[in-house]
Length: 410
Image 1: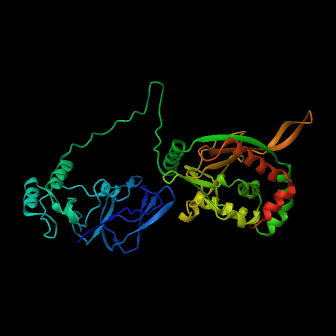
Image 2: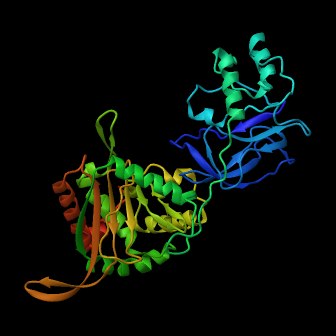
């Protein structure tokens, strides 16, 4: 008997995915645990293994289609078997996400299996309506098919299909290009909307003198080379950030709306936003307080490379407590970054550059680092955000404090 493999609930709040590539085609023989598709979720691209062995009878979606959890992905059975005669099981509760994937009943005259749970009256109704009960999901006890289930299946099968939607390539002023909102870009849009709709965003902007930061980077470069890594400014900023977060723990937290609790994290997992061609991915440097600046430099490099190659493990994207978006490598003076919800704060680091600044009534050219902190005002007050930024600047601007933080492993 043919079996349907449905897109499983993989946890982490994932409700849908996009089929990047089918690894099999209809008619192929597959083994149990053989990967049949690459599916992109809001976490990563994953290879989906088949729980069944047999012949691929039907692929239920095309590449680039968005699939909901519970939807039928692939039907597998014996060669030559009808994909409509499938093995059934008690369906999910009506209205659950999994019901979106139940196969639509078809107008056929195929015989109904005797083990389908339905009364003679329901079977007679299905026969009169020309329905195959094998494809009708039951909502009664233990998956029993009711008269209402049969009538609903008939309505679905005979409902008029919407006509083709015409999308113009032009408007009044000229030509248009339509770019589908798919993949990482689609996930990024969803996450950003969730964040701005939930957290109360406020941005605090300040500036640090970058002389000590630049000097220490140059000083430790030969030592870093001995570890096989090249130092950038970012690993130092991560270590300075950890030092400041220890003094201001509510910035290293999440807000549990349901329990009305601020959950302060006693560890420091720093997310590093990575710019990829079709969106933004935020892999996480775990336990940054236990790693030196050399360790973090190597880890950031490997995580960024994996993010761009889309080879990150799901674990690389989980567990963040605070995020950094490093815009400085591209340019800019200020930004208002969106919090990586459910975290409560994010730091944008801008371009380190020569800027004219007043010192003691005289104008000087100084290398400075603009810092932009967005925070959730439900959890953090403006005064606390300012004090945090002052302590962050204090570490960044003091060579001795910065080197101590850079080498710290606790």
